[in-house]
Image 1 (cartoon, rainbow, N blue to C red):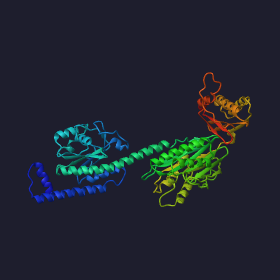
Image 2 (cartoon, rainbow, N blue to C red; image 1 turned 45 degrees about the vertical axis):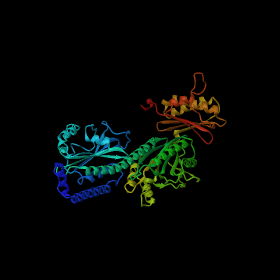
Image 3 (cartoon, rainbow, N blue to C red; image 1 turned 30 degrees about the vertical axis):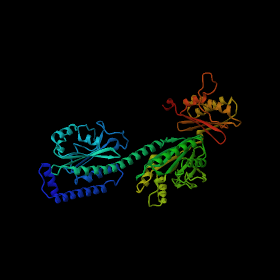
Image 4 (cartoon, rainbow, N blue to C red; image 1 turned 45 degrees about the horizontal axis):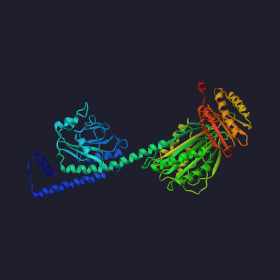
Length: 590
């Protein structure tokens, strides 16, 4: 090695190097072997992770100090962000993010001048621009004063010249699939031999291997980012308060490779002041699972709006999964809470059972439900169970990622879940956090987690008013009087005028289209919200119409849609229900 360095120094000074032909061959052979050993060693040290930041650190530390004294790594900003970038070569507007600086100089010498995390473009006169546009290494035996001044002009108020002038520099592109992802700037101290053509070849091979590793990490980061975005967009923003219940949720992504999965939760407002609660888990991870989760969640919302019984909804969901593809399986727990009847109807498709915490004594229990087969198996029956509940009881539904740990019986996790769910808490959010802490500290969790907790407050009998109306147009006036009187009793006169108008429209339609059964009018007070429901025996759902100036019909639902906070329609076993919801008026809030 000393003889090789002597020959390199002599060649740099223009002095013919001594030595026989055999000695020259031996030196060349030793140099080639040394470079190959270095490349093999570097290849073994990089690529142990698909984490982009860790991969960059591995590459930087693999070349310092054996091959170079300073290694600065720059990547396209879009690569660091896990995004795609425009096709074609980079240009003077391309921003390059400094992601690592490894060196053998004294600590802190490079940190202030070229801090990691800075982004900057490079003009065309720099060797960096030449490297990233040509895709070939650029060798500078010694950085002259003139070149040092040109490079230093990019660094405002920071003098980089003492760090680079008179050093040997090799700029190598980090590319994969003929796309330049970034580049490395390699610098050697003046005391070391300058980079030569063999170093250029070694640097190019090093960069090619590092580029492939970085591209794999980049693609993984990009796919993970896309899947995260897709999954986040599909997870609903659930209202914390529904009719007769409060809801809190938590979602935790997985912690190992393929962490993006198909876990989801949802709540759907149903007629009769009821609320559907659902938690599901598509088996597998990645984009396909997240996309399948979105399809199933949309299907559950649609079928829930049709007010299907829990077992029938899971049956239809299973049929849908069969049509979507035979390779998809999912577990699902579907519950319908009726706050007026104080009961929950549940059906299970291969999911872990829910936990019910009794308000009376704080006792918690896993509900004993028919397990059922996962969605997608096909040809299996589902059963519904009705569970009576009391005001203040809490229902906890989650996916198996919360309780399942590799190498541990799932019964241990279920026991911990049941115990932690019974722990008293100041709020629903605190209760969820207590459960997450109790189960997430055991270690070994690899799957994502969906958690939904509902406090079943119920609706008191004095907050519900129900009337039966005859199929007579005169009953419309009576319906207005009944609503007005009830709102006075509830001290909700601020919404009386609007409520009477909307009730008139709905009762008029019901009386006109009902086939023989009496019309049912129900008014529910839930906190500060008023819910009105009109049920008849006509199965045809009303739709919004564009009524012209001379049209006699078609304006009723238009008025409802404008004045109500929310409204909807659904079929029942005997006909249909049309409902609307009124929030407190501004005057009422004051």
